[in-house]
Image (cartoon, rainbow, N blue to C red; front, side, top):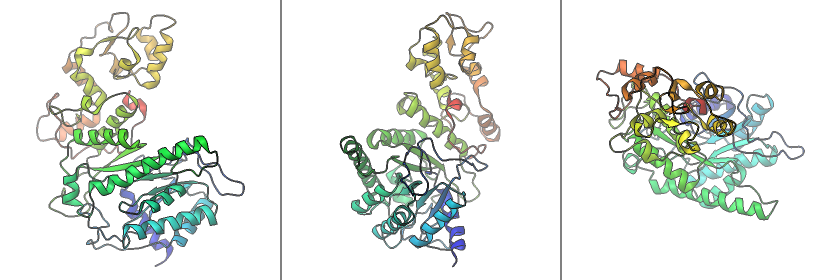
Amino acid sequence: MTVLEKLTILSDAAKYDAACTSSGSSRTAAPGSLGNATACGICHSFSADGRCISLLKVLLSNSCVYNCQYCVNRVTRDTPRATFTPEELAELTIGFYRRNYIEGLFLSSGILRNPDYTCEQMIRTLELLRNRYRFGGYIHAKAIPGADPRLIERLGMLADRMSVNIELPSQEGLRLLAPDKSKVSILRPMGYISGRIEENRHDLAVYRHTPRFAPAGQSTQMIIGATPDSDKQIISLAEGLYKKYGLKRVFYSAYMPVTENALLPPPGTKPPLLREHRLYQADWLLRFYGFQANELLDDAHPDLNPLVDPKCGWALRHMEFFPIEVNRAPYEMLLRVPGIGVRSAKRILIARRAGKLDFAALKKLGVVLKRAQYFLTCSGKMIPGLRVTPESAMRALAEPEGLALMRDSSEQLSFFSAAPALSHGKENSHEPPPSLLA
């Protein structure tokens, strides 16, 4: 099998992994080295659905000894198999870089023989890139659950970012669909990486020339829609991962039915892309807006409302807090107003020192009045003629994606009931910028 044939198979097999990012690391190029990485990112081109394609995203091998039912590479599936040698993959990466096709590498793999052997092959590949070819560009490597901690440490010394996919939100889902994996086997390397990053941060503060361990941190991925877990379970798990392991990102990947199994959605089922999009929005609120998971969702509302973004959903369920006076409200409360983002909230704090703000001034500061007008006042007054009720606000704030879902659904959706499990939605699978969550 030629290298090109292997690349065709292994790049296609890697497309289901969403935990692929190319920002957050600054690696200064040594004299005579090839490439570098910058914290502002190396993304230059995007696919039609918004995903970054500036990294060579590939598997070392799609041969796997595990039998995860949701995976296209599981051992019992009849599919073409291929495996790169470390030399082939290192040479391919450098060749693509020199042709300006890519600026970095995202490397994952199926489990060849056992976790230790797989990790050793990945280490060998990265050693060739860093030492033989003196490649200073961005590398994201997937840690292999079950591998020896010493191997994971060596991998982290060579990569800019590491990730361990948690795969499914619950232990029960793993037991049914991925019997070779467990919550413990996944969280153990995640905890080890987190500890080494913290140790390395301290060492760098004391010793200038300390080797850097995964300077861009670690991330993980959860598959959405393969199991009946609620959005509340998913968001609560993500919040716990951020707090306990200091993750940079949690990625959410809408399950795409590619295999037949009684425990999985049947082939032909549309991936829940709108649900994935809503989870990314909720995740943004956890990271940058000061929300807690139990505020966004509770037992009465275990799933995110498909009609509106999570911030609007929270505001509409808590109208007792609104309207707020924009000239007096604290920063934390401004962030909770739909239509006000982090940047515009900071601008409001600065601008109102010079005088009272009105709605025209708020618009100039970047506030999206189409959403914010229902939740704030300027000098005690709302926009003239605006009558606010939860129902009228919901009708005005409902987004096209949610309305399309409501039209396609065979049952009537209640504005304030828990959203049903999603199986349809307009394709919009990438994480939204802050403006979409303002």
